[in-house]
Length: 231
Image (cartoon, rainbow, N blue to C red):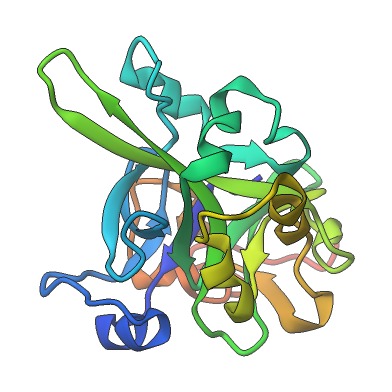
């Protein structure tokens, strides 16, 4: 699963890394949640950023609520499952990020962890996108993040992880000439040696909180809490 992520790098770094122009009004995002609009690079416009809503709304959907349940797409059935099998063939995208969050149950609590590349650089999730037209003739563009089985490092937290593309594979992912086998070859767990994680501050638990504290390392003791050796 991938239910929250971040994109905190400045627009100059994003532009340089992906070779695209960034909007003047760019704002860092520390706690991205479903339904929110985020930058992607699509196979239709590979030289610029597009801003789509997170949560795939297939073009044949009766209403936009379908996107609430389609923030992720499993690599294992993406070529055969109805919401995704059309988009994966011809509507692929890069979803820009510099980290994502997972929650691990420890006792009675769910503890948030932030997962990044070891070098803390920006990267791209493999994604798919679609467009949907409402009754007013307005077009809503949306995307989903593709997930796969977790690598050895991250399996300690969750059995799934988003597909992270290597820089060498990003342009290939946007190619219009990929076969089914070539598509599946990209949908593998990322190299364990190139990833890391840490316990994140609990403010990230609220999807409405989008401030720098979300990506800070959790303190051993939060203000106002007590610590006991016998707990």
